[in-house]
Length: 132
Length: 323
Image (cartoon, rainbow over all chains, first blue to last red; front, side, top):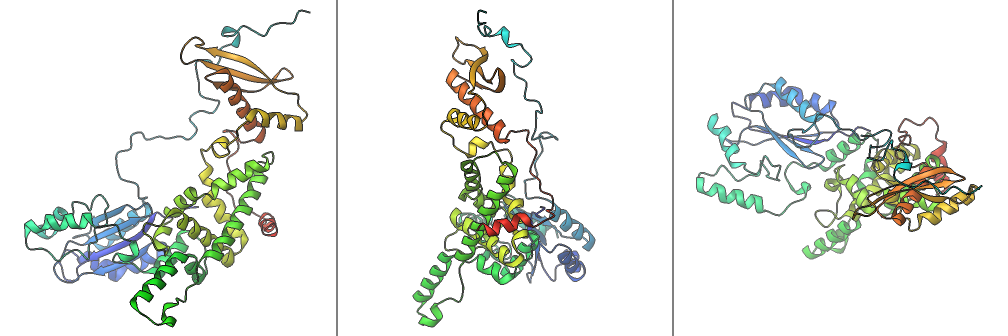
């Protein structure tokens, strides 16, 4: 069955800073809908008063990766889109994928080795025929 | 604006790598630039802490999210008892006694998960044994027992539990939780599900989380067989087929350091199986293993496991009655 890999989202922002306006609007309008649509993600909203670090959305995944996304000067809709993007990701590192294909069954009839399709008489003296 | 955003980007050298740098309990914006590096070093060298001791943790919400993540309805109080381990209760009582509380306050009101874990283990073993008997009817009892033991072993169950975030929710004395604690907690979760939703849903749960761990595994990696030729002879006598005759089918590089022999097992002049090996004995043993795999139906090209929704509950009823 499908298990959503996002464990929890922490929304850290300041209630007075100007660039956290989008975060504040998100909390007022869209956060409850987001939480209702994703019941398996725990959403923590923690405003820290006073001038502090930039507003950030921290995502923690089931395999332990923690990903921070800056939400300074983003609108509420952009934050919703970002949150859904994080919710649909897995916690694997975002690195270059070496090849865009993978298969668990590389060979259906058996992998070729130098002795396939060669008659076995070539390599072994055949079974000794009984004198009749 | 630029200054405010730039500061956390500079100070968060370890943030991008996903370390446990707690943002909201970070020290207040330090005025001294030369102090920042030292404080960052202190934060990086701090010992790892449980997630429940870091900021932003709501146990009830996390447990509800867990039940939604697994798409199961749990009775929440059963689930909460499933996460309580006996080592946690002992350590809490010892701590309270050390703090000098009365006898009544020392005794915790919590029950531990030993009973639930035992029930979960029994159900999981019975259900898995029954699944394998249905899917591989030719496999002997020792084979199904080996498969069931592998699927309920400590490493596998603790790996599954780690990836379901059970290590955050489980209450235990040591951090990080040892694998037997994780195994016991996962089995207790299965037991809690058994009590809340009944055996059918629990069977589907066990099937969805434990059986995919068999993907890519070979039968004889899980089941240690010392004498495959003897086992093969027994199987063939049961089916009234004559004893197999080993013959060399192909050989390469006989006089080199790395020879390859393909030995085929023939019964009544028809080929049963063929296996490669470095020496003739190794090749014969491998051919016997291939023949056993074919007989038990555990080859690589067998039908994959059926994960569709079951229509009748007969199978799981048999599982409970055999408990």
